[in-house]
Length: 177
Image (cartoon, rainbow, N blue to C red; front, side):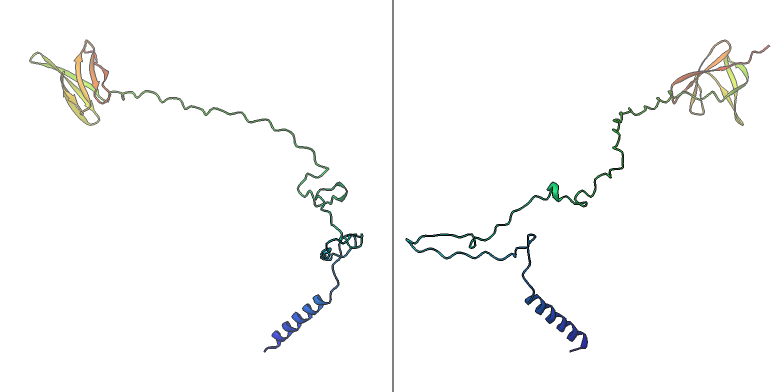
């Protein structure tokens, strides 16, 4: 066996010897706590007299919260005496969530055409329209850019229907001298 094991074994033997010869533990009042011995059973017909020296002492159980036995650690999380008591907090009022305003109703974009001129041929009037770098010849009933349909012509304006939203729009005609 190694030296460390011998030292541990000697320490264990010393501890066991000290525990064997240790005195009995004493209670708080200085009375040794000894297991109660059972009194011998009396014989039939014999008188039984019990003296106070034969009765074992009964220990009383005390509450943890005796006023005369209070210690500083019994109320660990209590507020210190120098702090002010907390002010009552007003209840939080429920606030209704703000409702976002409804978005405006969709509207048709402005008419992207401009009038370049007009011509009458065979009793029908044709209008020359410009869109970006493209030119169109438009008559009543034609569809332009797959989104605008020429509905009718009034005295000084051209009525176009914006097909995706089915909205009627006007295009002012230039007055010719």
